[in-house]
Image (cartoon, rainbow, N blue to C red; front, top):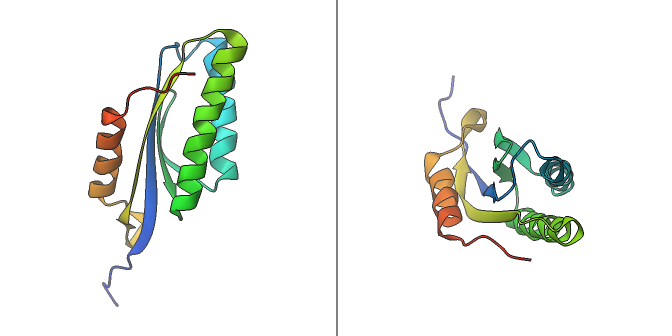
Length: 123
């Protein structure tokens, strides 16, 4: 039996929402749209909390396209409802997947650090 670890390039997107309670209707609507965007962009949610995401993508293109789409969703929601919801995003590409789909901690940590450095987007 082989114990060879198969590594594959992957991309992690970390995001958190700031400014509106997770049980409030505007946020619930935004979160539904976000979940749809993740699916459209071939993202797999690794960690999910109502106000926070860690999503894995096979290609950087999908992760970056999804990040732009998430910012657009938040911006449009703020314009329509007069809310003050902000979104911070960090994206890290690297050798983050191994046998049995385990995530390497370095990529998740890098994405989280980038997220903390990012200022919230304003519409």
